[in-house]
Image 1 (cartoon, each protein chain N blue to C red):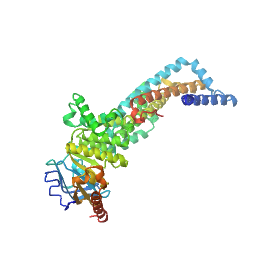
Image 2: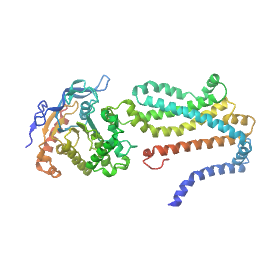
Image 3: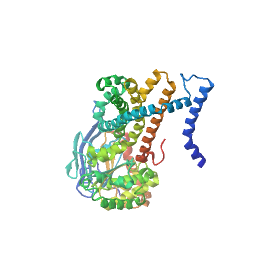
Image 4: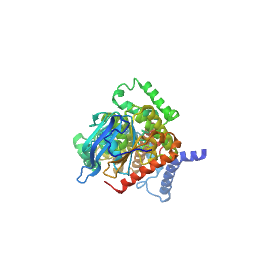
Length: 256
Length: 280
């Protein structure tokens, strides 16, 4: 029993370790040049060599990502509650929202740069734009899928809209919200990095661009690894918050 | 032995008491599009103050619609709905409702689920925090009666289906409604749990005598629980037969196995059979 638990706890590490081992061995075995695919050790070496650059770049990206994400959280929950609590609102806004969501966010970056210039603002706004739609859609779904019988009970008690939203709608939407946060935080990263690649003077995206244009491929991979690790970190934080606050949704057991 | 009332619900249904719920020539069509679904037509029903009455009938005959009309969640297209002497024009606050699905909130304990109406309904809402201790005491007394005392701080998903349904019943009664509307609350339970709950609800009703409308598919249930059973026709629904069930027929569990009880159920069955064959 204990062995099984240990194995379960170790399995993600083993999988990740295996992935990097295969990568390393493949690079060695097929003698792949560093300029095409550097091995993990080469990438880590580059990472250590350039750590001050990578650190400041990742801090910049983390900053734009988190700011964009929190704006997305606030706007997404507010609009989601609005859209989800009324059929009419849902019908009226849905096509427009889907349209907005379908526009590739990278296409918005030049516009944002035109408005706000090069710097953190376009990255923050791109992160916000990519992350907010899943939050909105999930919160709206969570609120709109209230059981009709329960709605009847509440209405017959003379419940006002605001009270229903506070007592039932929002708590009910919480698991949906957290499911979306895990997606949204990753999307916010994507948004930030893309914006930095198109128009910025800092951040991981900018580092990726400059490193690849000067053919420092190991540095590119080091930066990519950092983005991946940061993504996992954010996901884990979102997951922890979720487990604490919506234990009832997983019936007290663990999730995923 | 069993007096069959003519299907004219105008006359007081329950021992000369004034009607508490009265539906007169009610019609209702579902759907806003051209071909609406006629759910009720020329529907008449009268329920006395404190009476326990059951509505039975073929599925889709408008039983649930009737409850929506009585509770004011829907307005009729034609005809009048009067509850407690007033024309119903908006959702009534004096009703408690329970459904086949217990619809409990999974993030609240049983106790907090039962307290929900008090946090919402108006005279209690404003003072809820101050009077919480008193409300909890009342909820616990109710729990005690329905056999839930030990599970007050459990979450709904930790309870069996029967227990959840008990919690749902308590939630429908905590604000001491004058009118209890039950939409097949025993429908999804196993036979033994269902029998237990029959007695629980009966005991609660005996104690407080709130006017009760029970919708059910189960004729045994209707005869055992209700003072009056109304048989509805197939859609569009209306009452085609009303029958008083004498109290001596249904005093204990054992009574359900008496020939007179079986006879009554049988006769009701025949009326439901007619309803299925001849949609009006």
